[in-house]
Image (cartoon, rainbow, N blue to C red; front, side, top):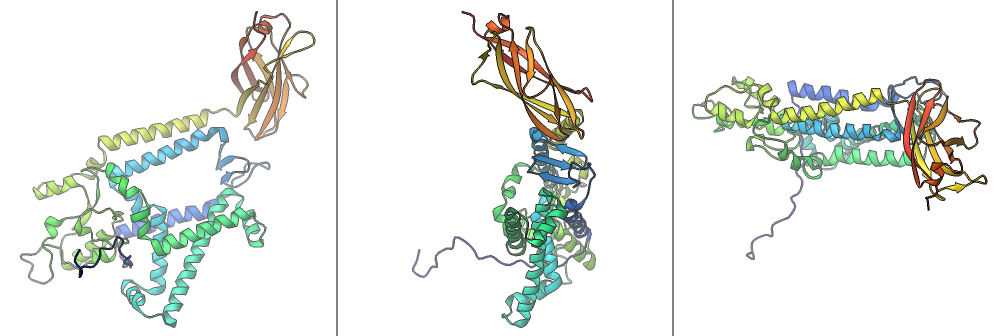
Length: 473
């Protein structure tokens, strides 16, 4: 390095992005998705669902205290975590499917970072003005006018952030009750801490970091390349039609692009789509709306920037018609993703409707392994956990099936029945006894099956276990 040459910087200073307001079909689609997704997020905890006097009446509730998840008429218990695992797998496959078919369409329309950033942009534009006004304000000195606009914007952002954090904690407790506790200062400290953390992250990510979260923090831009191929539809620039760029009335030797930078000015991540596919692009299609508007004004065909695939470029350069959208979407890769996604969804649905209203687990107590009673009989001890997932208290009978004459006794119960309250779990200690001199008493291992039956509905469940006797000498 020469003495006059400046050292190269490892990190470039962030260039603030001030997207310009744009109108068009994709902008309208983003408005609809933003309103729907935010509406679902903020309103869902307040929807009521009658489950009777003994259960919460919140439609969607993650009841961590009782380790259950309520979703309208569906109730998921801790031992049914495979439903949650299945839904997570479906979400991953769905992301793979949409990326393979339409690129980063999730990032451009439905990602929480995109939705809240879009909302913060809207507030900023409403208070400070459109792109040019915000640029002037950014470069202006800190006077009363600038402080007033900035503080107003930050206060609105903060209110949105608080509402975002507050809505999240409402999914974990009864929303009206928790709201009263939060206002009166009686809520648990974890609720205030959670709201504070989510408020801070929403305020910073949506208001200040914005595109940096998508570019630097999110791993998906680095992964998406493995999901895409030459038939993936994504936002692209028809350079064979737009180049060479230029302004002026004499356009005989110029392309359709008039180099107005409208596509750049509306981009929420501040890139120029005319430079080709870039990691930063979230395929929100706002550049399409901006370019289509300019093309209409200059009397040129729309679609200079459009949703298209790499194969479309080769066809159009050769003068062939563009392939149908459906031919791009329905191909081997997307069909496989769709089949896997559907198979898991159908499997979870079937499991949901065929699952039993009762569940039982059997845990042998092996310390000691067996007890010799005064009459010479052998006794084994088991902890039987019965889950009554119905909405009524029921009596459950515990019986066994074995080739040997084994007897069942329930600790603290008369006979072989036990009452289990509705929507609860009961732990029952069970003794199984082999008469003195019987084969089970003198054999090291005897297989048996414990049955639990709901006497009101005749619903049954079983678990296989082992009885241990004295090993023959």
